[in-house]
Image (cartoon, rainbow, N blue to C red; front, side, top):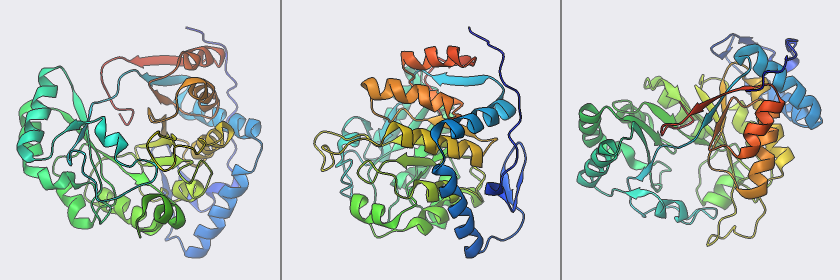
Length: 348
């Protein structure tokens, strides 16, 4: 394991976090944030994104070193995803077209869900990711199986993570009865939601959902920022990061758009690796003490090889399903890798 001496210079505070207190557990607002302050802060974040990548990576690396030392975690095997709607979905998202549901375990009733979860436990699983198609209101209806999940969880001790979608206060309260970690996509641009997801929601609905989940008492909030969802371009990702300022997330998970065969967006290109790396670096600078994970949902091949290296340089401290290049880059950067070999979500 390579342990080269690291630069221990601490990152100086910047105007980006003006009006915020930074500590080892959260960035918390000192006062109620006005629309004007939000606009000013978003402008500062946009300015930060426009800086050259090497400069951002230097800042982000120093920040990670200050809060996490040389430690990074590589998650080798994700939890098994289970769709609570089978292959059914009331949305027709252009980037998915139900493709991802086809590759999940299926459970379209409480009885089926109980059976699938019990089987996973017998096979040695310690946890699961519940997912599924969206309802018209934007939610993933895991809450409809609350009593079944509680019963199986009590029996098996499984850790239960779930993709929540946009939830109401009532739905969040139901989820809090069994959910260990809320995996909530956060989209910061209304046009992206309208054109790509075909829904009428806006960024405020995603922010409200996060706040409902937090208020319901779910300890592990792990919002997912989908980079490049608008046809491989950056459109709303910076606003999505800004929207996390009040919810004290446990993890910020960076998902990367994959042009998927059989969908309307199969001919699009994934986002530029430099853009993804900049989003990661900005996330690290904005939320210095938070876990930042590179999701298993990202393009493969040479793209993944190059991205994993840049992600480490940009300040991630977790990578799901790392490439060989990630190990090599970690060694070159003097990072100490901890391998999580058992099945586990990078939100833990």
